[in-house]
Structure formats: structure tokens, C-alpha cells
Length: 172
Picture 1: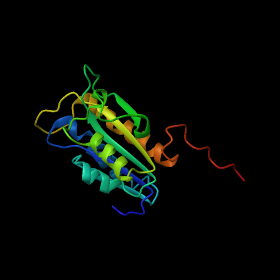
Picture 2: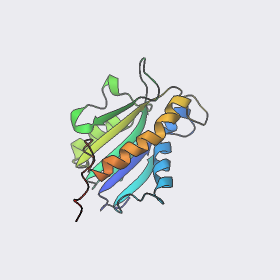
Picture 3: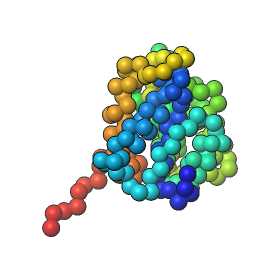
């Protein structure tokens, strides 16, 4: 990843563990759409297996990083999307368990200690239904992909605030 990127979108997961591939599916959707709806030129879309050092390398030097990952909800509602600001949460907490044994929470903690967090870090956690070996998302998680890609596009355009999109410039 270019160190000068203003925005990084990182899909975390594994396509061979069903719903764990949701992060990759969202990033692929954004890539597919970019021909018709280009993202700002300083946006980098990446896939990651969630390994902490790799994640830190992908987001170092960014103003905004958006991470998409599957989570295990107990009991959970598959397809539900949670938006978490890293500054507001300990992603290693039991309520924020990703589908990986070691990963995002540890990467955030390590990046904090090393001073390598992006200026803003937003995590979209998608509750999973099926993390067994195999390909393809469950119906509920698959249905969350396109709307989540829409939310991320809007986040990027408004600087990751999660608020309403910026007002269009006045007509002249």
C-alpha cells in the first residue's frame, strides 16, 4: 500500500470459511463498482487475512482506515452490521470477538503501542452465521454486502464521520 494514501479500506477474512469472507466480498464489490463510481484517487482497497503486522502495514500513514470483518455474535443475528470507532472500543473485548483467534484487536493494541494507528480507524463488524470450511456467504451475510459497500462509499466521501453525507455545493 502506498504510504501517502488518505483512505484505506481493508477486507479481513478467508474465502474458504464461508461468512469469514464477508470483508473480502465487500472490498471486491467496491472494486467492481469503481469503474462506474470511482472512489477518491487516494483510496486503496486491500484484502487481508487479519494477521496483525500485515494490518498495521496496510493502515500506517492513512488518515482514515475502514476495516470490514466477520464477527461471532452470541447469540447474534447474522447479517447485522456494527460500526465501531477504534478510539471508542477495546476490540479485544469479549463482545468484539472477530472470527480470527489473533487479529484485529491485537493489531489495534499493538499499533497504539507503536504509534502506528491511522488518524481514524472505523471497523464494520458483520455478524456471521457460518464459519465452517467451504465457500460462499450465508444468505443473511450475503445480503449485507451491497448495503455495507454503500455505507463505506458514503463514509469515504464524508471523511469517515459516519454522519450524513456532505451537502452538495450551492448551484451557481
